[in-house]
Picture 1: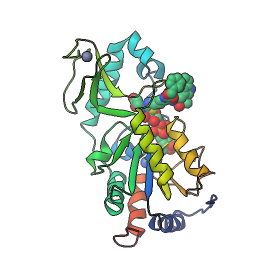
Picture 2: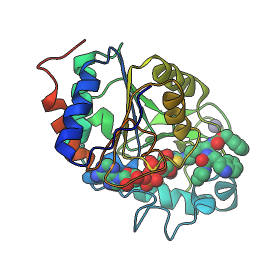
Picture 3: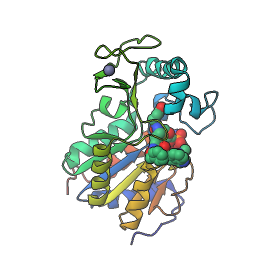
Length: 259
Ligand code: BV8
Ligand code: ZN
């Protein structure tokens, strides 16, 4: 069992967290919007969250797309153009460093984010549970294209079948890509420490990975300036912004630690 350890000061928590991580043969990480906050990406539930002014039902569900595809494409094209102005932050780079040290056979980064910033920071083994802003696909046939930079028309058509293209993201009430979900479950089941970074732990099934780790008595280390529904169950909660906390955590690991 790895019961919750309440440590008030961040430095002591960081040392304890570094011990747990250093001793873990395999690592898994789950990130949410908070890991990209210091890159200038808005989170969903904080003040000024993404969904404000744009009801989820209208811009991030299949029904919303059916009702008004132009409105959904305006929402996603805005986010795509914002993406061109942001860069990975030190938190993303710290996670890429962890993957380098543990090698991708013993490290899995599962993200709820669709911004591609983990890959931009050098992470190569990224499981995107909710898809990607840089990919579009056909709403009917299997046409799929990576198009990070392109400015898309308001209602892009499929060059293969002429139907409407859509962002290659998972909307609410849509299933997650089966293969990605299975790999995420495998990674959490196999890991010996689970870092949960920048997520409100409210969206399922992603949040279920945290509960799975806790049930499996895997040490769970949360990095979040705020408390969340999993803070009490996590082994350790590092209360601070991931762009500051993660580089400190990596710096506390024994040099070139790879268990
Ligand atoms: C599913 C892609 C099976 C799109 C996203 C009724 C009917 C049907 C389903 C449901 C239902 N009721 C509930 C559900 C399940 C539903 C769900 O969980 N709803 C929630 C709202 C309760 N889930 C689904 O629908 C999923 N599919 O269940 O399929 C099914 C199918 C049919 C019928 C029934 C079931 C699909 C979920 C995926 C939705 N797509 N994204 C897009 O992005 O446009 S989710 C989207 O919101 C994000 O991807 C992300 O996952 C989520 C937001 O969560 P977070 O990432 O955690 O972000 P948030 O802002 O909430 O929190 C940020 C945190 O960071 C905060 O804690 C903050 O303190 C912290 N922070 C801030 N700054 C920093 C920081 N941390 C560190 N450092 C900092 N600097
Ligand atoms: Zn098509």
